[in-house]
Image 1 (cartoon, one colour):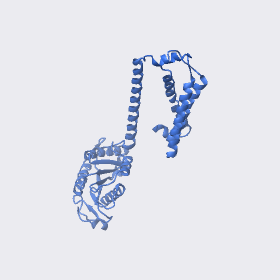
Image 2: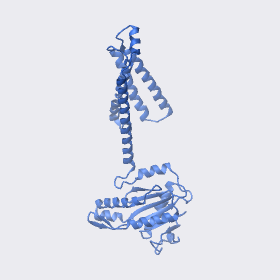
Image 3: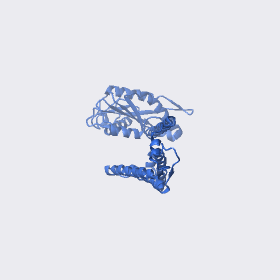
Image 4: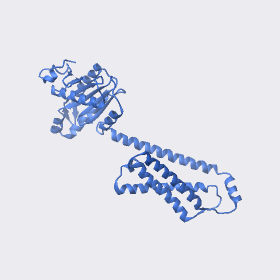
Amino acid sequence: MFHLSHVLGRIRNRWFAAASFVTGSVWSAHLAVLVFHWDDNVRYDTTLTLISLLAGIMTTFLIFHLALFGNKSRLRLAGGGLLTMIGMATMYITGSEAAIAPHDDRAYFVHSVLRPVDLFLLFGVLAAMCLVFIVAWRAMRLQRLALEKLAYTDPLTGLLNRNAWDRYAEKNTVNRNAAFLFLDLDEFKSVNDTLGHDIGDLLILEVGQRLKAFQNKHRQIYRLGGDEFLLVALQCSEASAQKTASDILETIKAPYHLAGKVVHVSGSIGICLGSVPGSNCTTMLKNADAAMYRAKLSGRNRFFTYRDGISTFFFSPLRGTGKGLPKSIAKGRGA
């Protein structure tokens, strides 16, 4: 279904037609069940048999269109359900009429119905059907998990990506104990420009590996793109958030040995707490981004904590003294 819903143009209709012919297996099983107890060979009326088969295929084709495209309104769903009933009824009635009885004697049919059934064959067929169902269900589940991982995981670092963050922000609210730490590497562009993008990718990969040490059941790290990372802490006090930011900065600035070269980078972190009035995931990310930008303006390799206004930031006393800061920043007092 996932692939069919994303195919466009004439190819889509061809896929629909091919998928609809799968109904042929259901149709053949249906006819086989109708004559399961008959002892003699059974013949079928060609015209009625074709009508029964086409009814199943066309119904499936139309249901695909109703279910996968257009507005998913209740009217369309009701129409799809009605169409399913009509198609199944047509397939059943015409299939029943298509079977030509080998005998006219009613006693023969009574005997056919009441005679013992080959249980080995019956349970063998049931077991095979169950096995096919389980394998198909498992394959679809694995495919869905693989597609989900591909969509929500950063291929370079293995961290969750921007799509995963957008999904989280859409489905979750912020509590007062939450904290967002927005990390941006300092002078990463210079590394790309001087050493090449291959070294830049290796650097991002190594940074991602180091950041994974800060993940636990209450903390999740996202790579938002480029050299930007976001740590979401669900149970985190202000002091704990600042301690975590300090530890991350110490971890980030340790030397990197990449392809025979020693690379040194630092990072700037903006912190936003859930206690800020009017906080939600989107505003907290923006506020943490603004605080990170102020950390860069103040000299990099430090963190700033956002409060309730753009002129009130608290910078780390471990990273700087506030000298030479813009006036809007120097007004803040040390964290």
